[in-house]
Length: 319
Image (cartoon, rainbow, N blue to C red; front, side):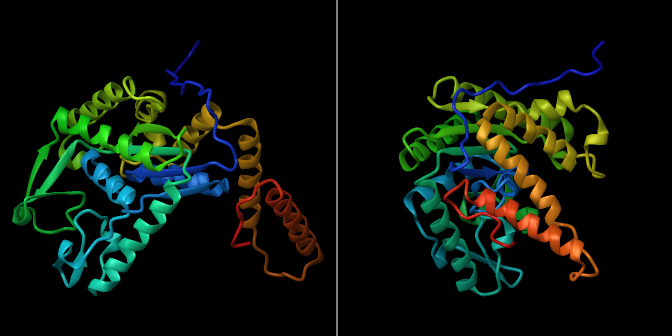
């Protein structure tokens, strides 16, 4: 007898190899998945604009990365003694304008360079809602805690969602490798501040638009991350205390499902060993001159060196 409905990710014929570069952009769930890819010592770049949620802003970010178009001072606004970009996450906000611009444009430079060799792109949409900054008639990625009276909130139309997805794919296919694989996901994190009914409407619009797009676009696929958490892991023990965000256990479960479907056998083995090494690196001792601890570290160094010999890119840089 089965006691849960399991959701599987269809196996991909195209596999992620150990030297492949993986670019990701979108919601905070994208960052959590990227963290695991980084622990597995794969080559990644995540969210050069910081965490962003709606397809319009993600499309805008990808276009700026594609064009390597740096931001200028007149594109920033001053608020709460900081200079901010409404296209970026608040982590870019700085007290001096040159500091904000330096941080923003460094991200564009890194993202543009990485995308040119990227073989995989993972896009995670979080919401269909968007805010317009009234003083500039500008659709924004982040409100930066500016008073609500300066914004107008609305749902992106189906046509706006479709155009955003199409333009994102168009720019990615132009800058990335010819055989780039683009994977779309919808974040399972519910935006409860929008309201539960409104959140469901928002997610439904995203899922509909993505499914419509991937059915028409080559090398684009949908990963059922939302469905895995909503249906497969339908239990609050897989949520953090806020009852919204998935626990590390849930994220790892989804990552394992993804790996089974998309990693080559070599990549699976490579990542498994690196996870074990990372766990071993967490071990601490009060006596670093203990012969047993010295032996433990020597054997660990040998394992790291064996892993380094398997790839051309640098791994375990902090070891």
